[in-house]
Amino acid sequence: MGIFAPGLHDEKHRRAFLEAAARTRFGAVGAPVCGAKTRDGATCKKRPLSGERRCLRHAGPAAAKRYHERLFEAFGRGEITFEAWQEREHRRLANRLPRLWAENPWAPGMTIDLGDLEEKFRGDLALGGVNADALSPAARDRARWRWRRLCCDRRRPVEWAAFLRDELPKRIRRDGPRPPDTDAGTAVAALFRVDAAPPPMSKRRRLDPPRLPATAPKPRLPRVGRAGPTISDERLADLWAEHGATLTRLVGDDGDERTLRWLAGLLARVLDAPEDTDAAGAWRAAVLARRTG
Ligand SMILES: [Zn+2]
Image 1: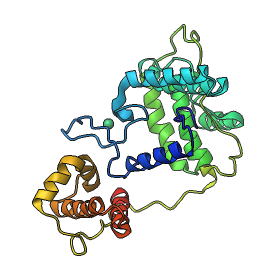
Image 2: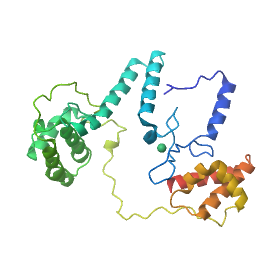
Image 3: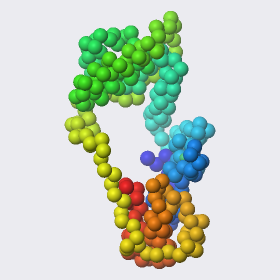
Image 4: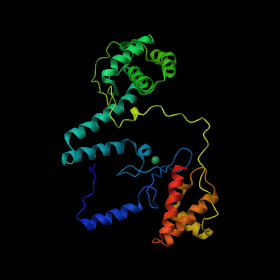
């Protein structure tokens, strides 16, 4: 993307930058975490947004404003094109629509454009006894998303019928009659566009994957203990002071002390012998396993 790419002077500078960056990369020992306090008293372990201390959930509106200011400045410096900047601004407006609709479902706008399929969508609504033009923009948008999912990408007539029978009437009742002055205000154009034939790489081309049974067994965590190095309480406390956030993130909510000691032991080996590739490999495997486990 290159919008906020650092200005690297030469090859040496580039290598030094990449080396330093490797230490704080996701999953690495020094990877930054958001650290905001969550409702259950824990610490947020998500990664911060680029240029911010907090993650997407915790950065707040001021960070969003800074992001758009940075974009605008990047546009001013000629680092991104006018079209790219317009696209972000458009996305911002479209992302605001659902919040706007929560207050006024009759606010004009749409977030998905069905293109040539719009006629088919309206036909399917009419078959269900619903006139698309009578719906509020919010309800119509929701119906378009459901239709695309259940009638266009997938064949789920039962779920579509349930949507027409249960959810849509509820929305129509909640939205009430069309207020007299609804066409005022500028409509926001759709962010997503659906073409009749999906592009070759589109996920829409993939047919329904077989659904997992509801009680899919949880993947087992790697066995802890036997092969792991031992670690003293003192060393564990030291590691905890410095890398507590990383360890907490890896051990997770369901982790026990044995898992913590096992991971801390692996980490201690890496820190004691940075050039030991076996230790580094074991640590990396453990990090990857914990992330997917
Ligand atoms: Zn957070």
